[in-house]
Image (cartoon, rainbow, N blue to C red; front, side, top):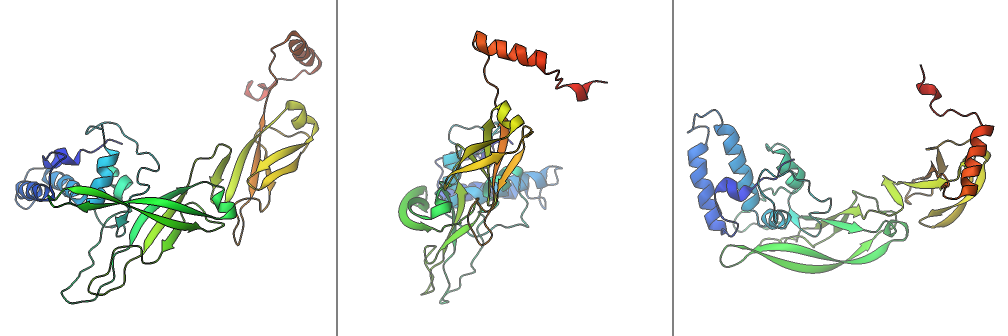
Length: 311
């Protein structure tokens, strides 16, 4: 997708204050609102203006957008890093009914603010906050306590975004899975007129692992095996997050065969499974003795791996 320059849409510099952004939005809205402007592209232009204002007038979204967009230009081909919003707190929940561009939906679809409808003198609960926490896969097997740093944007006296950091100690429960939310009661926005504070919800994401691929509670490991181990069968040692295990490779195994270790995935009421996916590893023909063995095998075994491709 293409990066959207929201500052360019509103015609303001990146240093614009909240008041300058609001004035620019109101001016453009009067010019391009479909009720006042009958140009064929007025509705699309107004949607773009609304989208830019939605991000830039919201301190949380603007701070995250500014950090993400450093050095990027409008229209530039762009893919956000998977953890681009880790550590930022957002209030509210998705507004599924709002019109969104692909760019906006990918970045802020789960971080839209909704109104709390506060009234004078009424006791109101504080808004919930949402953030992402990226943890090692090993935490899901034994649990852990992690200290995280969260970034909370505020408006300074000049109406510009400033960033405030806070640290929290978070208990990672054993068996946590990617996408699960950890709730920290009372760590959201403060209440209004004596109302209870909101909660903080941390969405869990696993760091990329050098060995394992995660799918729900299941784990996958690419397990190299020698041709004779696959052909004749063998017992090999397989590393898992809880220690090495001996696994039998059945004779006649093909490349890509999955060996299932039931219940050895991420723990839980119904624990996941662990899959060792066989990958045939060919010995290098880097010595004369090795090449002689390959020539001998070619003569003794009339094997054609492309037989199924022949007419």
